[in-house]
Image (cartoon, rainbow, N blue to C red):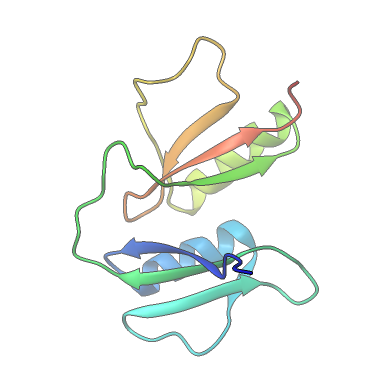
Length: 123
């Protein structure tokens, strides 16, 4: 039986991406980071999927086929997390595909990788 071992993001600057994602998620490097690769894992006692960051020269996609969804507890939590992530270096994305009443906010990490912050308190 297979299982997902890690979600991998291509990044242009592994140390910068490591700094952002460790602060964003409260993760730590599993091993000593390399210049072109690092695997981040939940901090001691926490659970969650691994996030691997690999050096890539591929341009960021404006409409990525795969992205991360980060879950917030409710609308207030979502708003606070969006502001926290922006303060860490994320950027708001002027997303032209929002539905009328979205439960998600699209951001980009410092490398431009798109991800969403979801309000999971909605039905």
